[in-house]
Image (cartoon, rainbow, N blue to C red; front, top):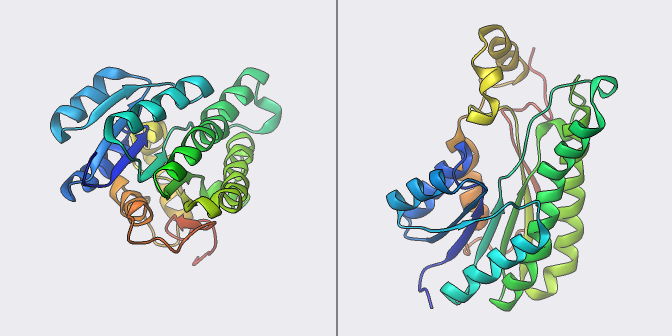
Length: 246
């Protein structure tokens, strides 16, 4: 059995995921790196001495098998975070049925799949932290965000219900809701100067986020020392979801 906390990271090779994994590695946490594409996961694992499990988190059975594999290998599971997701900036009337289904599956579907698989296993480990990712778009009305805002708002509802369901097993469930973050997922926005300037102006602190801004809060919530926090939604968004300064 591992002596250090074991953290299961879905979407580990993404911009926020890799920043989080590097922070956890510095603290000697044991990492289980999960995602759909094995090559970038393996590259990160070689750097951080992590355990790779290729898995599409939209698949309930595959996600359950991945969590059980991690538990069998390490003998415990202390934290799980789901960083899988997608961005779609379209008004409702321009969003196709296929796009809607994709956004739901990538954002809310993966979150539900991870909760379904991980919460009981965290309970078997004596409790632990389960962290999901929503968005500032679920807090405040932003034009052309209908599909992703709906999916991400569902993540918050899911987390609060799961926090109540699994509290008796020592499982804490929380949410982090970022604003726009400079990641490969947001490349189409941040690589366009006009779009970037507009996005910066929407954030009260005058800039978009960097992966480490979000990773620091995820690290805090995954830390077993912070074991009296559950059912919360942390806005890590430069004020986007709650305030205006201009």
